[in-house]
Image 1 (spheres, rainbow, N blue to C red):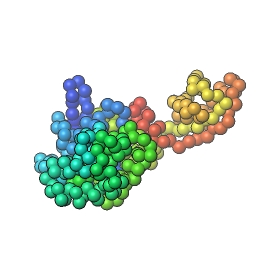
Image 2: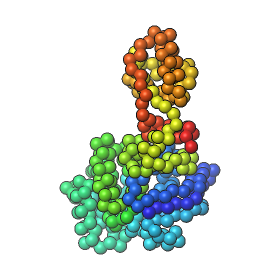
Image 3: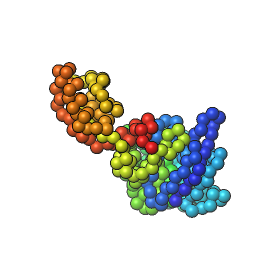
Length: 302
């Protein structure tokens, strides 16, 4: 559905994309994750035709790369920042953007009623966009992106800064859209959202470092995790213990990245006993997408 081969883009001294190749299959909910400045937005804007790559090729919905106009109505794009008109109502915004695609007002209104019902915005169609909450603004932006009934929906961090309840509602909408056959590409800074995707690509410094299902990425983590609860709240209490690759403190527990669990257990126990600190709980834990993210960002996994 989306195929990119060898995409590269440089802005001055910054190599924003460096030989990026990805294949997103029809029906995927495909997540793109990476640290700030990794190239997520540049990649998405390039796929949408808003940025011209220095080199590389893009296929969308089977259309050849030299005829991008053929896919304009097959692609719905929701940018990172709310970019609709605050002094227009919800319905006026939808009509304005639908008309830019050459749709008749009658068609736009009929489709808008349907989409606004899906997004729970039907009762707010006469409200000014400036008077909407953050979550409702994102739903309005999604409505305008869907007005052409696209086969592909591309969203750039659509829930950034939105409260958890609204994020949950937004993802329920995305899943319902995906079940109708829409292929979704979404970038997100939230690892719990990455877990909801069928496949995930991790991008850093303009390069794709890993692509797999969330389960596959966790399985390829390459290290072991220990969850530790002790009679201490000092985030640096484990400093000096040999063999610990990383230690994270979460206020009530420590997550410790190691390669050898039996040795790490013994070394931690000896260290804490020497300090007179009781061990309340220690067990092996399954890696999360957050752990995978950190490892890939630090170059710990290829």
